[in-house]
Length: 330
Image 1 (cartoon, rainbow, N blue to C red):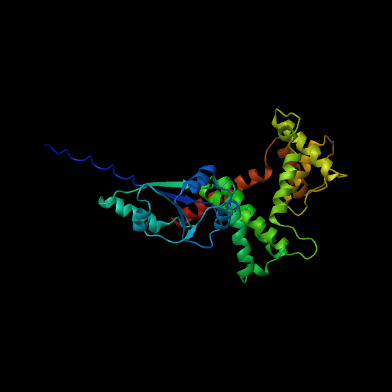
Image 2 (image 1 turned 45 degrees about the vertical axis):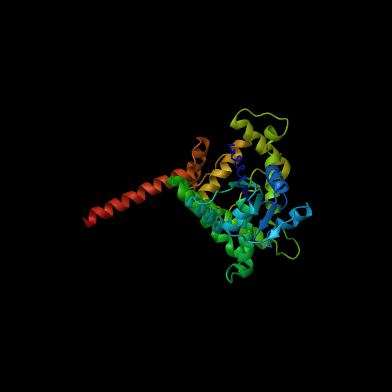
């Protein structure tokens, strides 16, 4: 009698490990639908950080979370029999665990579970601004220098950073441009943080952002409203009209800061006069000042940025000076 060998038992499924990553810049509990599906289907949910901001929301939703930092071997064992283990990652992304799983897989002696990296929440554009606000809060509270700064004390830095930004733009250096934009942004956040401490009229960075958002929407009715604008000139006309309605100014010169560089001041005044359709003769007088005023007005009428033009000429002069100095040393 021939005995037949029993069929081999089917090999158990290796299971599944899901590494769930979340962004600390997104409100806790706002997880993606695939993340919630993975959590609901999991046999075990582990998290090494008992203070992880997601834990209260997961538990409130009925997900049992074990506060435990498993080794790679323990995770593989937990997945035996086709089970699913979800690991809620901490801020560093659990490198020790993933490295351990990679070593086990490379050894080839263990049947590894499926490993899935599942982003549970994503940063929206601008999310890193939240980091900047948090860093500024801490610096303001803990740095001996920053904690003593005032709006007036920081004013000179705002001017310096603006000039350095313009220089980076004119140089065409994109790395420098990115850095200088960050320095200008720091001034905005720094001043807003100081403003929060005002005893009678405090405001925050959110108030600053909310104000500019409202202004942009109101001054772009061709984008957010029912008006139309097909050319840059029509857009500028919309802007000037709504700006005039908001400010209710009595003169076209209202709001022009006289403390700005003289050439920029002259150009701005000429621009206001031309945009308003006024005919105002230039003041007559002798001296270089009146000649410069006439040149600035002419440049504005011709669409030339007088400040940039003079700066370019000054740079050419600087280069000529350096060349002359080099020739003299040769």
